[in-house]
Length: 322
Ligand code: PMP
Image 1: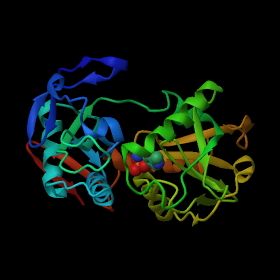
Image 2: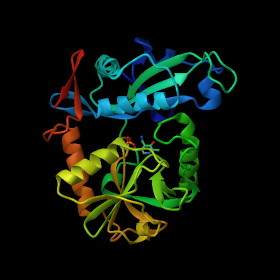
Image 3: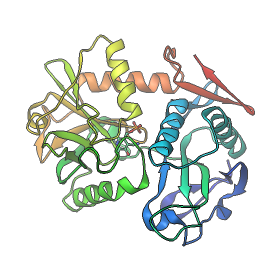
Image 4: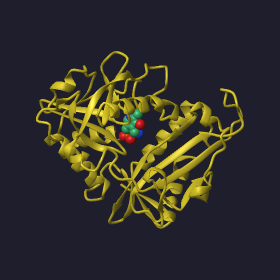
């Protein structure tokens, strides 16, 4: 990989996939009159690729691509590719960029062709971008945990912004949450649902442990149904841990035994305090550590993959390791 550092430390890779072709990083541009620039009309994914003995391995690639196409469906974006085609293109992109591990950002957007709200004939453009990306919440976060606050911002009510779609237009809220948190000295913000119960963080789902039981809020229309959330539930069940998807009152954040966030970029990251109240002892708890370890073992090919979560990039083919 012969990348060079660009803005904000993002390492540029040589190639970006655009509508079926590979174009140099610096040529993957949009016109300012693209519909997405004005109205937030794009859907996207974030996928991690791990270095394994068998080669670079994309975690839950098909599930992410399915969610991408679901997001297109919800937002009526006519995309011409299916999961198999995109899977192959993603693998070729990693191959071509000679990237062993990193982050993959599939993006489908409405481009030029409409100036009003109705997207009309705005051209649909598909991009696949990959680059090296380390720990999202900081180098020590996986072990030491992060400080979070409860946001003053609420997540949207069902039937407002469709939160099962990973649409760019949903993310100004996440930015407000994150900026407010940073301003007040926190790393992350946990938002409440319109009914005042716990919803999700700026780009992570929320889990807590109380009395040996793992709790997470239900996908109630106020949050994105995370793929790492699903992996965490499955790994917990595989380990014999009881899991309950139920509404969580805010104050349970202050009295739980363990609290952690899940997301593709974040992986599983402990929360050590909420609103400056330490979570239990303020150190990573045993269930958090177990689930972190199990997730990374599967992702990095150090454990069997009973659920078929790994897609290994081998040459110009992709192989799902079942
Ligand atoms: N919620 C939001 C709003 C997100 O942006 C993300 C990151 N994609 C998540 C939750 C976690 O989802 P996933 O585990 O699929 O990355």
